[in-house]
Image (cartoon, rainbow, N blue to C red; front, side, top):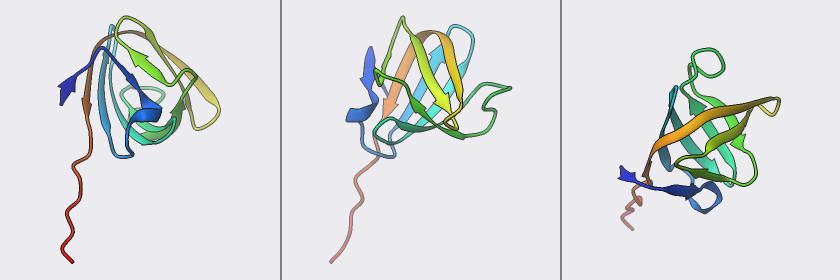
Length: 96
């Protein structure tokens, strides 16, 4: 994983993994394409991976709050992001 100051979720390929540490929690996010995500890390709202989407702007940035919507109905605002790490999916190799 690579440390980052900010990430635009819409610019990441599907399958990218984000490790987001906030002041109060630690979230693991899988990017599914565009603003769609699968997130876990909150003991009440998403103790196991839950589908959601990052709210506009689709930017996750150190020092700012992360805003996302779980299951198209529950808005979540985190405490400030203190560490952000990104892992893009490895390209698949195929033999023809």
